[in-house]
Length: 221
Image 1 (cartoon, rainbow, N blue to C red):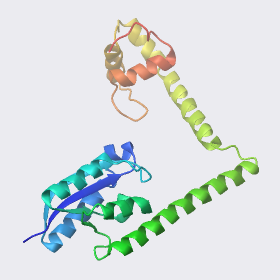
Image 2 (cartoon, one colour; image 1 turned 180 degrees about the vertical axis):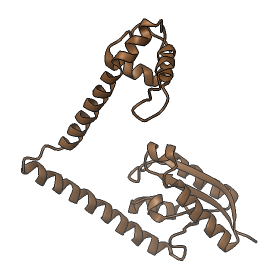
Image 3 (cartoon, rainbow, N blue to C red; image 1 turned 90 degrees about the vertical axis):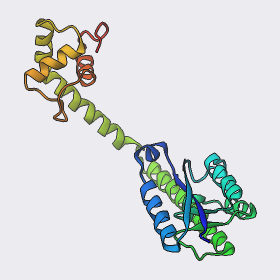
């Protein structure tokens, strides 16, 4: 009889979750494993959570379904499950069988050891980062300065671009434009594009009109 699996996929941030970053690679690894062993993938659970978090509602749902359906919890990589030794230990104590695709032959003691090394690596990275930041600060480096310079550069470029459109935007108003859609139509008719080379929309037009300080309060899309 084929083994039934419940897969658990995890990404660390909302941004990654929205973009699907990391999920597809995990899903493919899980599907390859299930096909290789001739198993049956009953369900898939996806969670957006940090590795440090001790509360994972989707993981708990996955475990509960494994118990209910007598399934094996399947993950692509051990570090997707947790980097906490105590967390791995508590999962093992729950009695639910689970398999890490990147090391399917690992027994319980080996999984605990892998978790130990993962937790150690995480702590070492955090310590090195903290030491590097402290050393940079001691040398007089203003942390975040590059980001401020880059933001100022982007702002200056946006203001310069907006000024090139002051004449066409004012001309649109003089020709009867009442809404942002009207202004966008005039800019598109003039063959002008956004800084990204796209056609004008009410949203992109609003940013330019606002930056130029022209009639933003009473205008609508």
